Image (cartoon, rainbow, N blue to C red):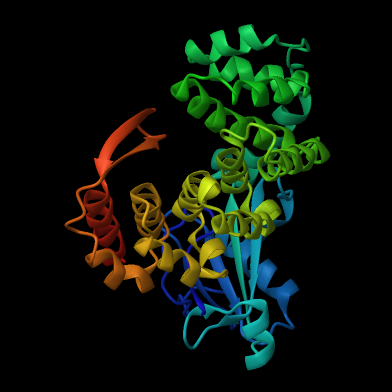
Length: 356
């Protein structure tokens, strides 16, 4: 099943690339609402030129400024292979080979602090960055009790700095996932996702190790795995280009009823920001869970359908509109658990799908 094209930076669907009228080459391109630019290379053989086109387009045609920029620091780039510009969809690796699809869609987005800068202003900013000393984050190990207290107090920034300064604090936060307080566990899930993202640039091996430990903890029936799969979802949500491959691990846990709530919540969080990651996988397995006998599974699956805009689930969702079974779901944007019904989640999902 091909994937509808969405911006990897904000998750919004994007229009097919076209000649914008002010490009410097024959590549078709587009601009997302979030400011990211994207360029289509229908042959797949001109990715270098497509990159240059995207970079210059992002800089408003200012070649001098484009060549001053540094990757990662000044801009981020994400490339989708298997792109069919005629249908404006992205095919999976298998479908790409079967259909001989060679197209590539190149996304690039400038850092927020360099948007709308002139070349002179950019050079000044780079000099300031170079001369400005980088403060070292505090380096001390937290106790579990102290970590819990800081989470309760909402001191997220302090906790993130402590994880940067002493990465072993990730393990302390992981222990908080075993707390009997559900709200504390959920806040720790969100925090661990952000902490992992903060460490990714300088200590990626620590983040990979954390993901593996969380997955192993979930797979070990003798271990308490509260929040483990949900945390994996948060890490993927923040770094889809790096850890999107672990979506398959989350899908594998759907075979087991006891793991479905955690895996589904994680998939919903990923699909909300990066729907293409879900659509590349076996979404039929998700759609079948809308008919599961467990209301929590049905409700969370409906939530995933809406967050990822999975249109193929529309008919199954319509059958759930009168389902009055109650479930609890954690909503990060509200920082609380909310009681709702399966029918209400199905209705919200249909509204999101039909907004496409």
